[in-house]
Length: 307
Image (cartoon, rainbow, N blue to C red; front, side, top):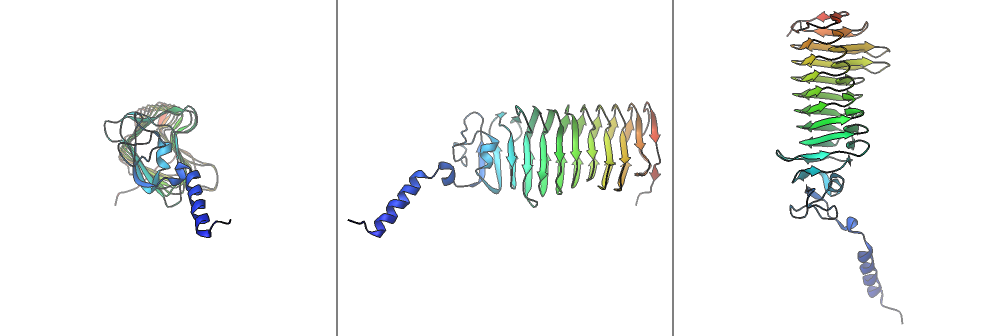
């Protein structure tokens, strides 16, 4: 005997519910919690008593614009971010990512997405501490990035990057900008094997920061092709670098503009300021450029007045 149509629909619905995976049934949250000690990525994670265990698991539980909050100290594994979100470790919690290989944090979000990383420790690994492929706005606050065989942070994004109160040390390069705009404030970029802060195709402003002890130049603005580069340095220290305090280079059709004011470019092994022909280098005339082994200034510096 044929079953009534209503009963067939009910049975079919029950079968679908039984075989749907837990992840497909999960309800996304605006806030999730992460604990290395007591977490499990199969948890709902939206309750402090049932947290996730890794950042990779936590971001899958978040609505766009949501936040993942770290509950206790521990390692939380590499993560790829594809939407607006915040990952935050509060003061007193050591939330670190020590990837066995590859990049610690990869950002491939939308062109209007906002990503915030706060209070994280990224340590050691092949690749970058943070790779930014696409993003609208990235905030990096109160982080430590060290020991990576490529860059501490490397960005190709056309968006805006804001880095505040962050330490970048003992990587290959420190901070690398191949696109977009960036503001760096109250940061320390120290003892990297390459250039401390490197700009090639971006517009970057650095204030109240240190780039010192790097095995290349402290600051560098370059263009080898059609890309345009701007690097503004204000109230900064670039000292004890193996190459220059502030280096520029122009090798193609793109322009390079470098500016320095109220800064100390001293005790570097080559020049304090090394400005290659074709680059516009403007100084407010109040920089301290002394004690550089190869010479304090090489190239033309244009002194401009303040407004």
